[in-house]
Image (cartoon, one colour):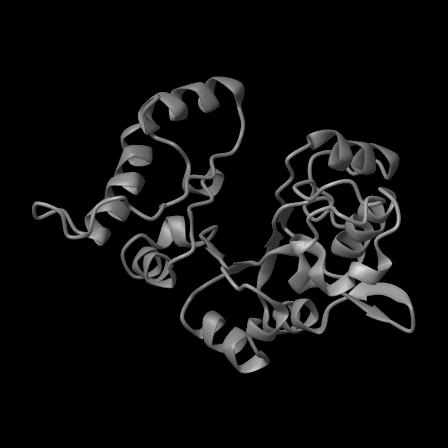
Amino acid sequence: MSLADSIELYESLGVMHTPEAKWTVVDMPYEGFSRTDFVQKIVDTYKAHDVDPDRVYFQSFFKEDILYIVENEPDFAVNAVYLDSMDNITQAPTMANFTEFVEQGITTWAPPLFALLELKDGKLVASQAGLNARKAGLDIIGWSLDRQGVMADPDHDTWYYSTINSYLKSESILFEAIHIFVQDLQMKGLFSDWSATTAYYANCFDYGYNPVNYGY
């Protein structure tokens, strides 16, 4: 399926678009085709299909891609998502970094979930990094809610929750995390590999599609 094919499908379903400018398998530029050409071609494909930029969340782990969008495609920059590839919490951006992001025109920071949670006096709370990002004026999208193993299994993969390993006892912790994301960080979005979890939370709190957009 091509990008154009996916756009036609998603448009028929009335959903948002979240294209990601992936790392390429060939070195760029390739036969005169540069990284910026690649990014621009993605945007041009949406333009060719008359998709409203407000419904497109262009995303990339490469900051240069996002800055290119900011400079050259401001309508698409409003929702552009800077994916953070940090390996651990020590690599989280500082308040100065977040301030710089905003000054550069970046609107949305998207880190792995461990960067958004921490323990304080034995309780699960929003991380300082997450609070700093919001204070700086950034929206947040987190990834990825259900990609870890079974919480009660001591041998499960805990990278996504590495800052709160000692707190992982049961699957209910996922709902605690979502509640913090919504109430304390007012997250713009949340990637999940199992939509039932987020849908159940949203239905319990009568949030509809996105609690942030409903002003809660």
